[in-house]
Length: 116
Length: 117
Image (cartoon, rainbow over all chains, first blue to last red; front, side, top):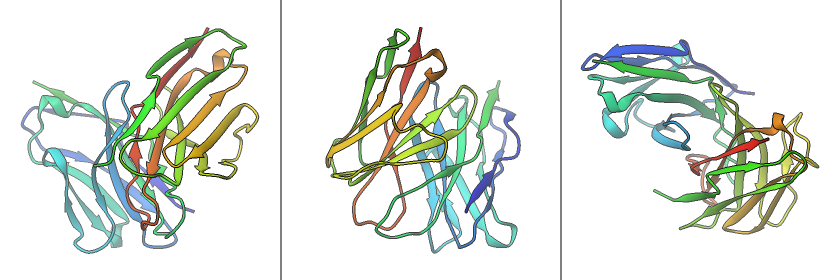
């Protein structure tokens, strides 16, 4: 079974500052890892994903994340926060199973607040 | 990216009535769809996996007679909350994946805010 831990349910940064949202996972096999963003009363939008290959993945809106197997981490970063980045962010993990479902296990989420 | 449409976006119903939520994949055929429930300020919890042409697979603790899932076509899955009660009030989100693909990305609907009064 897999699990995801997001440290910090709330993160507050100043506009223009670095954004760092932490995610650690537990999995019996090398997993697929995802970051999703959710705006109020909306569904989830994929920011980026890691499946195989390069461990540093770049996503939309200037976000990126690095898969570190030794640390079982997949932290999300953005060099400079923008007011529009204020949202809920979810880290998720799934197992690389072919032909079957896409069971995502989500972390508890991190609410990002961006202040002027 | 693929588009998944969920309808309605908001619904208010009286206690004891049933509510149907639709999840459609608009530009691809989805053999598998997923239904999640999200309580305020909490994460998404998988309720069930909906497979086209077969019975849904429910997660532990989810009442299958309470939350009826029908996946009658490759582009539509429905979740019916039967005999709804105030504690069923929540945000319900569906997702879908393309068939015959390695387990990568799921595409999410916009969600449905259900309020039972």
